[in-house]
Length: 237
Image (cartoon, rainbow, N blue to C red; front, side):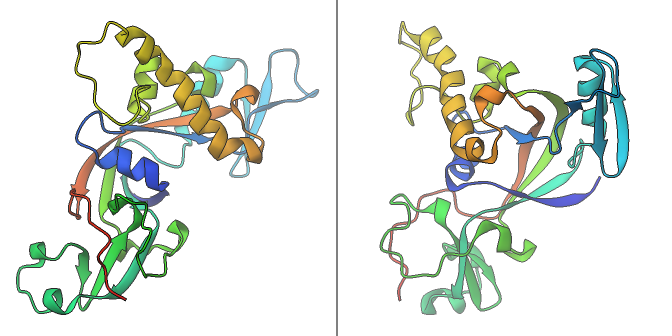
């Protein structure tokens, strides 16, 4: 078991934190992709990963071997990197003995804030937002534990897995169980995931239509060092 960082966008962080149907899966492109080469006979593949070459006979061996060397393994702890800021704590927060009364994550005299906390998308907040990639571990508030790892083609996703990815096919409101269109909405979750996937990966050459190999990570939220309620846009200049 090891501890590693993982990047998530603001909408995906919000999906992880929501009370109903939280996000519990993420798919990441396998890079480099397993590729067919003329050096191998039909239906055989070679895959070079971390200076090691794997001969892959078929899709099942791709799934088996790729999962073994996935960057994240079962039991690993992942601390979430997300858009954030750091500022001196509010005057009425810095002196409080009870840190739970502060709406931000505190570190000494500084407070960390997160774009995903704001209902208005952080508009009107006079802070300098920092990229996810620059977040140090000390600023992290969400910690995930990997519960399952597998490899598959991105188009192999099922409606159940699309739900687990945070795509419920119905917008932002939870389903009340009364709709006769439940199955239609359930199946639409895959289409919603397809749109999300292309927005993140198409420009990189790994769009839905290319059907790339991906690592599929299932996880559970084990630590949440933040307030789940949405914070209004009131942080001072």
